[in-house]
Image 1 (tube, protein in one colour):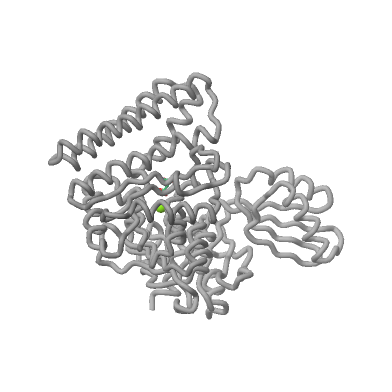
Image 2 (image 1 turned 90 degrees about the vertical axis):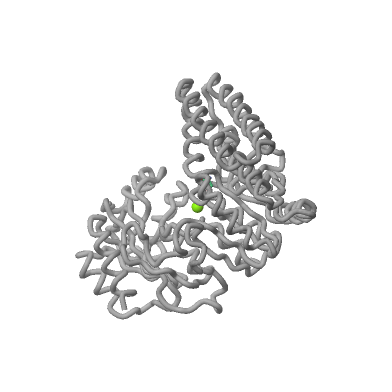
Length: 450
Ligand code: ASP
Ligand code: MG
């Protein structure tokens, strides 16, 4: 079996879904489990509906619900125009989902209160709607397809909006249900992103979580690979919106992909790697607009080449310098700085310490940072530098890549911190945000242009 996941832009309209059907159609011998996201932008609209309902803005809620209904109706009509019998049933299914959502949201509107549980239930509608239409579309094209509710399979904790699966229970569910439902059909189709708690309430795996769903299904089925279909030619050596001459990464290790995700490259949902690595299942990132392209394969470290893979960045970074009046020593310095940070659950990206100083690199907007810094100020001088960015060069065996540091200084003007990550998979530099674009381009050219 293989798992094929199609993201929002790969299923955004009639044309895109047509491409999905032909791509999947070319792989039927491999027994695909197809996982789909909501149509592009629908999850955002659903989030807006939830917020508007909480704020009791009835008109805005109604307008958005009608837009949603119209978009899905029109799509179904376009895809099923030659099969009026299927179209009729499909429209009924869509209407049932949307009126269910309408009733639920009206309730939220009346009480003006939105729990995380209600929010998850509202935004799960996007995937339920898209998958319903796509399943009909497969059947209309003569590819027999069984629609399955992913909430029957992925069982999570009750952290509704960013739920974590119980992999053992989930694996057993997936094996049992897919085993049964795949009999006698060309393929089984389900949703990414959505799941349910053991009590049966709807939960979601966090935004962009469909990749993670696909990896969980792949792991549970022992799939021979997990394909993630997007709208770019695989994983790029930098963000193509910033750097013009990016390259496709042919193959990279699970660890490098995880490092890229944590350093801000928008490749795969960061949790996607773990289930795949567990069973050594390759993840292939492909382009539904250019299916001939081989994309990028994420696999075991000993199967991927060494060397730099990509340049990533994160902006909205703070650089904080803590200076003690005494020479406290590294242990005491780190202990005293991290006690309040830990108590306030502040996610620190990087830290460095000397006998009397600690340097911290962290995201700008974190709750809990202000009280932590206040506690530290009781015994040390704290200087906060704003408008910084973190630029990372990622790859195995890049440490000591010749001239890299000089090149960063040359383009960025000033480097506040230079650091090799503890896992040795990245070299990171804190620079001024206003120099970010030029530095990214400069470093990318330096590493990859020849
Ligand atoms: N539809 C969800 C989102 O937009 C999940 C996904 O597409 O991965 O976040
Ligand atoms: Mg995505």
